Every structure is written in C-alpha cells, then in structure tokens.
Image (tube, rainbow, N blue to C red):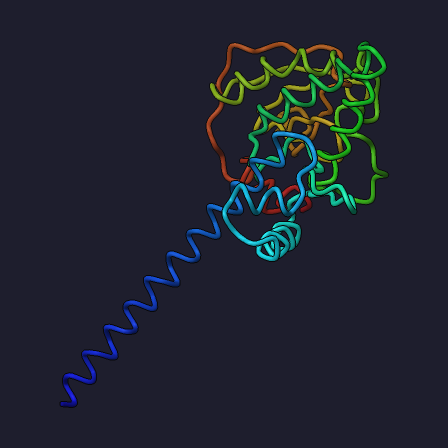
Length: 246
C-alpha cells in the first residue's frame, strides 16, 4: 500500500514537472515571437498580440513587462500599442584587437568625411561603444573613433599596424622614432587600445626598459633583419605583472 502511494506520488510529480517544463517552453517561444513581431515594425496592441499568439491580453501585459525588465527596448504608446524601441538589438560581443581596429578606423573615416546624417550616426555609435570600453586613468571621455586626434593623424597610426602586427607574430625587432624619442630598437610585444589611443607595448633595447609608443605619433618605422627570443624580465607577461615599474 505504501509502495503504491509512493509510486502514485512520484507519478504526480513527474506529470507536474512535465507540465511546468512545457509552460516554460511555451512562454519562451511566446516571448521570442513577441520580439519578432515588434521588430517587424509598426504598433501592435495587446489585443492584436493576444489574438495572434492565442493567449489573453493579460498574459501579453505580463510578457511585455517581463521583456522590458530583461532589458529589451520596447516603447508603449497609450491607446495605440507597443513597438520596438531599437531597430537592432545585439547580444554581448567579445571583440579582438583586430576587430576593434576595424571599428575604430571605419568610424574615424565616416566621422571625418561622410554626409551629416552618417556623421551623426557614426558619432552616436561611437558613444555606445565608448560606454562599454575599458577605461585607463582619469582621461576625459572622448567618442570612440573620434578620439583625441583628427582622422588625418589617426590614419598615420593605422598605416603602421600591419608592420607592427607582423613583427609581433614573427618576433622581429623594429627600429622606430616618434615625437618624444629618437631612433630606438624595440621588441614589439603587443598592440593595445587603452586611453582611447592605439599603442605598441615594447621592450626597448636602446633604453633597456619597457616602452609604450602611440602609433599616431610614430614618425617612421623599419623592420630589422633580426629576431628576438623571450628573456626573463623583458616579456609581455613581465610588463603586465608590473616589472616595468621597478
């Protein structure tokens, strides 16, 4: 008798779990469909959505509240209905430095010479990107891609990126000079975007210390016919660990 009761209880639990799981899946599908409908454009009332999805308007109200609470941009116009507040909503992205470089260059080009509408859109996009980029120090906010210098100066820095990136991969020494230093022989270690400028983290064989060179300030750069190998105290890991402060 006890066994039969226990078996019956387990069966009820299994049925309840299946029903709950189906309800969650149906709600997820419904939420996705609501997003899809709103992003197609136009205004949609709760009554329209409820008829389309086969639920009550009260369920639609709860679904809309749930979507807004999760961060989906939905605008409600009293008496008219709901619409998507954003034309496109992207998921979280992880960008490589190369991808960030492409974004930076593209926005700089459009911001410098495009028609006013595109310039305005580029500036708006740059501010959104800037809002989620890492900060360094207390530098004042500047729009990403429009940062600190006009495009003519930025382009001078971008032209050095392929050579520096190739030297980092092949572990090839470079000779360069910028506005702050005469010719130096360096071991390029990394290209970084910090403080809204691109820089090359290096070990300088000339000064026997770590050095960071802003790419937009480099006057000339030459690849040398000489490779380098890791040496203790001269690697990127040492730089990151703070050895350069000693």
